[in-house]
Image 1 (cartoon, rainbow, N blue to C red):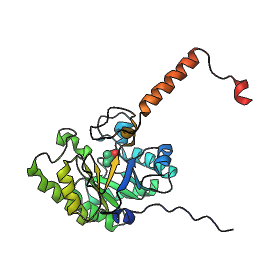
Image 2 (image 1 turned 90 degrees about the vertical axis):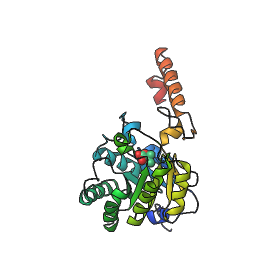
Image 3 (image 1 turned 45 degrees about the vertical axis):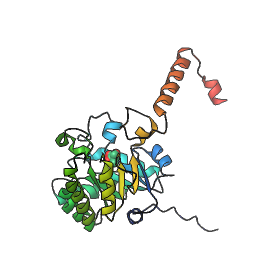
Length: 269
Ligand code: KIV
């Protein structure tokens, strides 16, 4: 009897090789059970630091600690077999120096088993990206609307509305691609700028509120499932999980209040 071939996970070179090809499918996930479902359809799953806001009720991602990212990263790796798992480096864990970034990225990779990390920032992070990649850590870059800098940006604002800023965003994209990032998230960026950047860089761009010209798209899972607060305008909502949970919980409460729930006899019959 021949042993079953293990399912191989999608690798960072495979994602990089999708530039200009079949669009890359990606979603966030923070737990083992949703990750197991997403794993059947996504090329990569991001354990995004958006989990601070989506799961833990924080106002921004700034307060997310490294240990929380590692805990959720581990759960997502455990729940999946196929997709590449990328874990976000949280605010304060990488900006200070390439050495600090390496220590924390290595900790994330060792303790979660993920295949890559993501960090925010363009040209200013290029040296750090090069340092990590040269030492064996695949990096996904993230430019445009970078939520960890929301206090400096004055909120969660679409980037590139003023054409005079385009050159700086283009320079950011070029810098992170040249530094060795294997893919680039373009978040909250006007459509023509995201399309231009996609043409200019040799690595795949992954849009979120950017452009259908990007090489792939990522959404926050809860946003596209209709679970939680009102999603950003650009999100196409594919479900009404919030409504379904609300109905199920209200039906359950009504059953309990009218003593319409199974007793031990029924359960063990
Ligand atoms: O944290 C996150 O979920 C992200 C995506 C929105 C790209 O960075």
